[in-house]
Amino acid sequence: MITPLRAHRESLKLTSRQVAIALDITPSHYRRIEIRETKASPAVANKIAKYFGNAVTRDQILFPEDYHVALIKPVGRVRRQEELAA
Image (tube, rainbow, N blue to C red; front, side, top):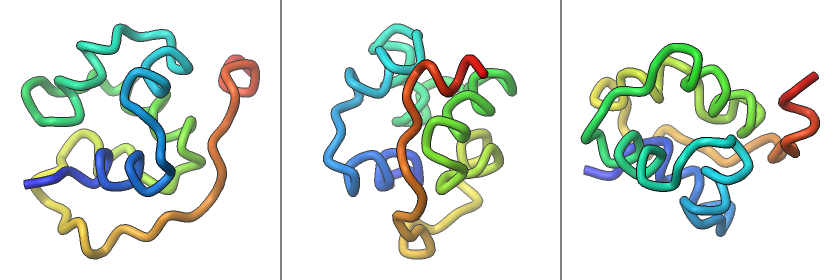
C-alpha cells in the first residue's frame, strides 16, 4: 500500500532524497517513514507536514493506514528549508 506521504511526494515529482535533505533528516530515515517501516516522531511529522504546506497532514504521516491514497489531492506548495526554520 502506498502511503499518502509517498503519493503526494511523487505527485510533486520530488525524490525522497530531496525531501529528506530539505527536512535535514537522513534519506534512509525519511524512506523508512514513507514506507511505514518506522513511525515518525510527532516533531518530525509536524516538520514534514509543514514542508508540504499541510497537503499531507500530521495524522496522515503518523497513521497512514487510516487514510486511502485516492483521497489525497496535491495542493499547496513546497516550503524551503529557510521557511521551515521560521
